[in-house]
Length: 398
Image (cartoon, rainbow, N blue to C red; front, side, top):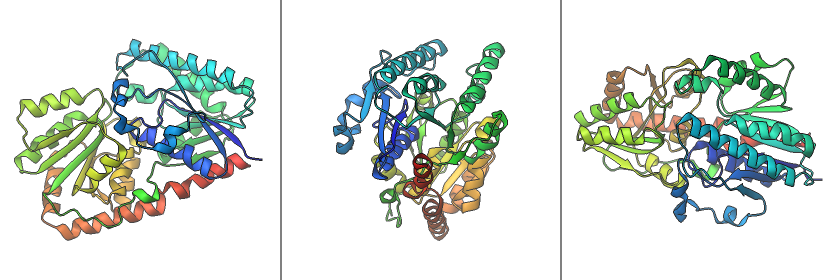
C-alpha cells in the first residue's frame, strides 16, 4: 500500500527562489517514487502576490492541473513585508489557515506530515495537526531559526528570542525525522536535541535535464548575479562589485528581487553604471538561461556566523549552468566551491581580489572552461535531485 505524505510549505510552485523550486521537486519526485504526496501551501505571494498575475510564471501545465493534490489556502496579506509586525501577522494568518485545513484533512490517513521551515509558525500548525491526523512528522530545516533573525539584525529582543529558542528545541524534538539542505546545520540541530533523531542531508540541486553539460555561449563577456537582494545577501559589497565591473568595462547582469532591490537599483542609477543590466524577476528556466549565457557568476552573504552554515541555492544553480563562481562567502558554501574547483571564495571585503580574479579569468578562456567542467562534475556527483531523493523515499517507506 502506498504511503501518504502531506507536504506543508509556504513556498511552492510557481513561487520564485530556491525554496519554491525545492518543494516542487520533492513533491514531484515523491509521487514519481510511488509515494502519494499532496501539498498544503498558500497562494503564491513571495515577493508579492501581484507578480503571479503574470501567467508566464505558471509554466508547468501538469502542476497547473493538479488542483486536488495541491491545496492552496488564501491569504489576505497581498505583499510579503519586512516590517516585523506585518510579517508576524502574515505568519500567524498562515498558521491559523493551515490549522483549519489540517482539521478538514483529518480523515485522509496521511502517514507523514513533512513541514518546511522557516517560517516556524507553519511548524506549529504541523505539531498540532499531527495529533488529530495521527501522522508522523518530518521536519525540513532550510534555515537556522531564530539565529537567522539575529543574523540579519531585524530582531534583538532578548526575552522574545529566549522564548523562540525554547520553541526551536521543542520543534526539533517533536520530529520523527529531520531533513536539512546544508551539512552546516547538523551540529547546531544535534546540540538542541535530547534524543537521537535521524537527520537526512538533502541539498538543493538540479534535475538532470537542467544540467548544462556543454556551454555554447560566445558573446560579450558577462558577469551575473541572480536571486534574493535581501538582508542576508550583503548588498553593500554587491554595489562595490557593480562599480568595479563598470570601471573594467565588464557587463553585469542582475536578476534581483527582495526588499533591497530598490536600494540596489537606486545605487545603479545614481552612479550611472551603464554596464549593469537589471532584469525583472522571472521563471527558473529563464534565470538558468541567463546564467548559462554568462561567463562568471557572483554571490555574497553577510559576514555573520549563522550564515557560514548556509548553502545558498544560487551557488548550485551557477554550478548547474557550468558557470564559474566568484563568491564573497565563507563556511559551508566556500568549502564546496573550493573543494569542487567550481570557482573561488574570498573574504567579503576583498572586492579588489575578486575583480582581479574576474579580469584574469576573462583573459583565460581555457581556465574558465576547466572550472565550468568542474561545476558540471560536482552537481552530477553530489547534487542531482533524482539521486538524492532516494534516502527520503527510503525513510518514508520504512
